[in-house]
Image 1 (tube, rainbow, N blue to C red):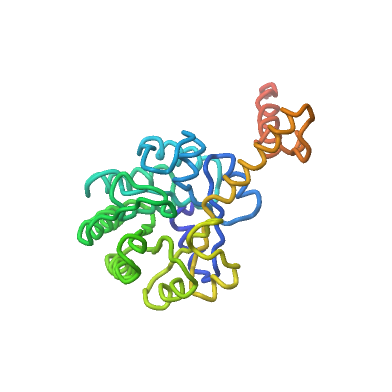
Image 2 (image 1 turned 90 degrees about the horizontal axis):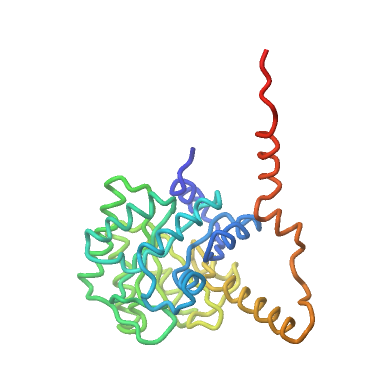
Length: 290
């Protein structure tokens, strides 16, 4: 069988922009796969919101993220990329995080250079570690991959806000040279900055498309023209869920029944009831012998 990492490498080798809605649980990942998207990303912001109802400010733990990753990967067959935050400690912690994320079934892990506890890249108060510490994190992640963890390494920098674009680009170039498979410059603030990133840094790059965030929200064709390999949408499904649930609650509170709900048969189909019933019937048959 093809491993998740190998499947992701095949997708990236096609050189067509990989449009990737992000998930927060097994159900959202299943819906992404059923909509024929070839990959998804486990968003730390979205998991913190869905699992804890807490902000993405470093409150969710390694164990909780690992458990969520395992559950998501078991629910789908498409490659799942995962948010590894700062790696949850020193170089040895990072190597363990990479190995355990790979064992959970993730195709790629993202490691970033924020000071722990980290926070969403489009919120205030971000701080980054030194250049040397940032490089150490990526070296440790790459070493874990090279020592046998079957997983890609995405290197992320949040330096654009606290240290400026030049420092962010410097880190991206160095992370590429250290062996990162994918590069993610968080929160460029204009199309010109996005273009400069793609033009001056080698390697495969991801664009983070957050509605009402700091980075321009661009059409697929424009992102591909700029030179991005992946377009991630980390909060789109979470925002859609919040809007839909709040609207349904308003209707119920007002004495009416919500409209536009998914049909119950469709929900059962999404969750795998037909497959369960077929298996149940198969094992209910009496054993026949000669």
